[in-house]
Length: 501
Image 1 (cartoon, rainbow, N blue to C red):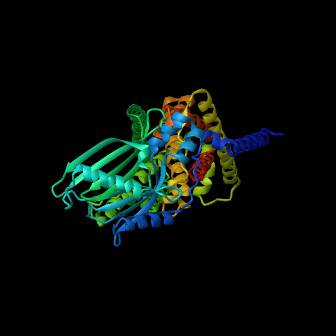
Image 2: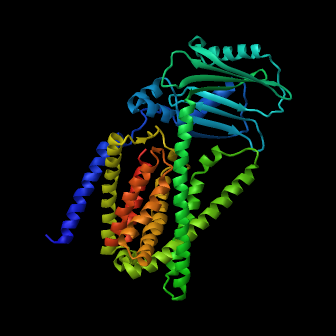
Image 3: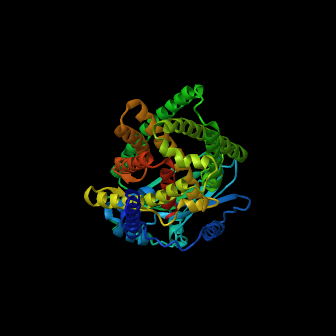
């Protein structure tokens, strides 16, 4: 058997092993919350609307949006403190950290309503945002407490004898008095966390109910410190990425004079990325609406979103153009074989043997890599105590307008922009000017990898190590085979993981 055929046999076997490992052990490496989502978005919104109507709140004429959300800090605390299996039991039976969040709002009005509905259809929280100037009653704290207790017992249907008061506060506003009361559940013990219940009285009306896990302050501080470290690593990665694109601009200017740039290819690539980014933003409009600040006119909000989206699309398109044009020029000089299948695509020859081999090789590599991710986190969790936050019972993908588009857009955008920046250009520019293949593989891989440090994986540097290895693998395949193999593999891996939930 020739070396070429033997290589294909080895790739197929490794890909099959990787795919089997992913299917068989994915849930152990990447735990999922064991929560049954019994109601869909429309049902949750109806439950929330009925709840508000029963409280006497009229939301007719309001805009509304409903998305799935989570109390991430509470979820991480329970998972780290109890382990996944026990945490699932507590989340299912005692502490709700997953919920549908329905919102009713009007542009330029402070007054709005939010209702959180549990996956099985119970109201977990509600809040009325009220203008500070709004007139209302000036109840004494004792009377306000009586009304809060009555609401908990008769409306929320909770037994207050199982709780003890921990806080009460009152605030005198210009035209009314507001009060807040907090209780904690007796006998609840998970580390130093407390299961709490709070009620807000606005004038003489119950304007808020919240059931939540109060995590220890030390955990909050440690959690914020850890997230800050991840943010710092991400910022450092971004800073080095900026340097990469500045160098790409310099290379473009130098090679422009020699006429060694394929502008049509680069401009088409950059324009395509810009258009896809705009489509991705429009598809995510429900998520943007959920965070709309009502003090801004809605037209201004939409215009701002559009302007920022177009600017971001143009910037990303320009950066991809620079990386594509400069990387193409350098790759044709240093690794001409790595651009052969791309040449076919640029020339409209989609059915060539080179393109077919690259596509098949890319999917085989993707299957190998999804297995690698599973093995990496099984080993890291077992021997290095690495923590991976469990995925929720619902994905934010389904909060987009057209969910099926999300993994396609994310996979394509990430694969093209990142492979062109860190492989197509990053590897070739380091190789040309530092004359070291090892550094050419390692430096761009590390810059790319540590840009992923803001994921809920702790310690935060672990993701950088994991992705650096992937970057080295992509770099090897780029040099030995071609860029198209890396593009297909990167796309497939991202699409699989994004769509898996």
